[in-house]
Image (tube, rainbow, N blue to C red; front, side):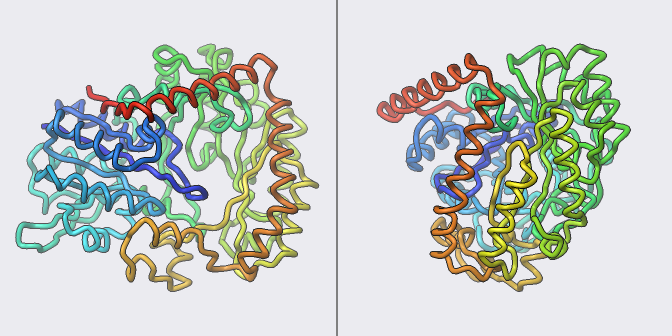
Length: 483
């Protein structure tokens, strides 16, 4: 059978774009392909980079891909801030396609019944991890018997079977990255490995999180706890990447690479034993309370150049409010250790806490100036459906509203928690935060990259602009990538 997997797009500034590789779809594709089925990924985000933001051109390219590939099943990846794109995709696809359409991913997993209600032309929802439910459906199992599948029968009735975690992640083949537009995802950039101008690939070597931050929905998709690929699996995967793709770096997308300290250290040893530390620079995410001198030293020797950590706030009150289960002291200590050992450290920070005032913003900015992480990001808290915060605040936006682009974008731009009027926040950001952040970022990039790299980055950006302009003028669609 044939499967088409679709990745969403966004045109909105300030709304998170799925700028990382669609690793979930790549993993599903590899499992389905290993079982003898054909797979194609239509990446609407990568298409947008080629065709520009005109949705009708991207839709035309998607329909053209469907006509050529003639899939038996189409699967849509859903993300809550971009759920409007899934709505538009279903409407567009149904103009010409009468086969099975499924939705999966974070949003569909968080609110499966509501997603089927809001998208009445969907056949079903894959809740949780998508590899095994989709494979069983392709193999002809009855939908009502498939774990993790919500299915709409011909009479409109809906059945569902509870999702089940994949116990042994090493049983999965390496994701089929060649199905993606690697010229787009591996282009030189200072974003994936913060501040370093490198071509890179993103990998996910574990699933889940053992914490329960009130703003997070990670555990909805992957379930409670953390599961890991073995160090041997990870090293073989990295060796394949180094052999097959001309990249300079790897970004490990794990929520907490150091959650299993012994495993992380074995991966570092594997990098060094196989000479990978000489070929690749890499970055990880880790909780600040897991950062110490021994592990930072080993990471550095193995080629890691950036540790990203969820600092979130500069006050203990704010950390406790979102159930971060960490301390300001641990955050400051982690930054100090990294800086003293020559390891770049990126601090993720949040704003728009409940009851937040301009004084809180000043304190957060002063904390950055005092602690001086190598780089930082500063984003408002987003309240996703089914998250503990969404439930505690008794928000019902997704239940009571149509999932149109205007409404969803407006919802995610709304400040539901802080005490700062929108205009006051805008003026404070323009006067105090933005000049500091821009200067800090530019100086950081200059410090971490030699002049030849900076020149390459400039000419790469110039060439992409020219190519994008040409493609937009000629309206040439990017073909779907097929096995």
